[in-house]
Amino acid sequence: MNIKLYELREDEKLALAEVMARLGAGAASSEIEVDAVAHELTLESAGDLRGFDAVVISGRSAMTAEVLDRLAELGVKYLATRTVGVDHIDVACAHELGLRVCNTGYPPEGVAEFAVMLMLIVLRRYKSTLWRQQVNDYSLGGLEGRELGRLTVGIVGTGRIGQQVARILGGFGSKVLGYDPYPSDAARAAGIEYVPLEELYRRSDVVTLHVPLTEKNRGMIDAEAINQMRDGVVLVNVSRGELIDVAAVTSAIEFEKIGALAMDVFADEGGIYHESRVNDIIRNRDMAYLRQFPNVVLTPHMAFYTDTNVNSMVEQGVQGVIAMAEGPGSWASEV
Ligand code: NAD
Image 1 (tube, rainbow, N blue to C red):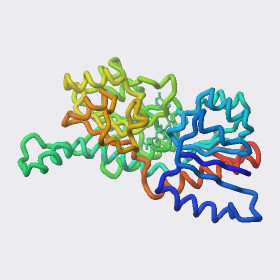
Image 2: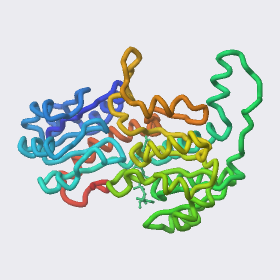
Image 3: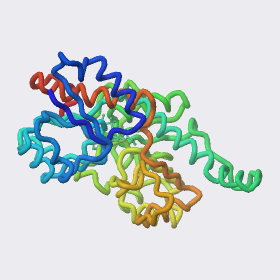
Image 4: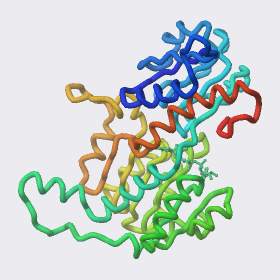
């Protein structure tokens, strides 16, 4: 099997070498070859794919109908993404073209810990504290915080990450509410009390999003949703930027309806996050405007970025396409 892996970062090289060694890939007797490149898979770069059965991408290669059509035409049959989210892939189109697709199911702990860290950062006003330290201002005025263990946290989306957030919050002693169209006993066992979404918004001091980006979920945190939330609510989003209506959220920050916002993701973050753009003119007004508020913390889509997850993403990307080739149902995270 010939596999082309795109978007290989420096920090993934060791993990890839280890996976290849385990598979015996590249050895004279091996049936598995992995060719890895740093650039993204695009319509233009797909040109060199003839002879490859499978591609492994990450989150920056947009798999539009046009690109997928080209892959199918070149004989590619399997596509794996080293991300949990699959919103950069037109999955329905891939299926129509006979392409099999999988994502990775790396452990949820790293992302969940990051979400809780963001809650703590905004609740303890650490952004302002950090700013002040730069100018030797060690005063306390305006920095009084709130204790997570005394608050009610509403988890929207009680899948793998949402459940892990609940388990961590259990240690703090927080009251944990949850909403999901598919409630689960596993989530209840993690300490989540299911309530209707309106009730979650009404009762939660902190609202944290752990849902995938789908057409239905796009812009789900709009003015109507925000109006149902408590005054001074803390909103945390480590899922996808497009889940929020950025104009509505910005206005709610300006009028102090939202007390604090922490986001690890942002609409149109591609080409900005994960890049050094120090000398560039960046065209994302919403990001620049929101970033300047003392109660808004933006991180560059790095909740996933731990040693455990990097190894797991590379391993599962390569193993995913190999397993899919072994037959239907052979890989748990096929989508
Ligand atoms: P998951 O599939 O285990 O859980 C998602 C849950 O959301 C499911 O239970 C689903 O029923 C629920 N859901 C869908 N629409 C909903 C809605 N409108 N309201 C309430 N619940 C809804 O996924 P996961 O592993 O927990 O990951 C969640 C998301 O986190 C991913 O889709 C991805 O976009 C994001 N993510 C971000 C990072 C990062 O580095 N920032 C890393 C991993 C995942």
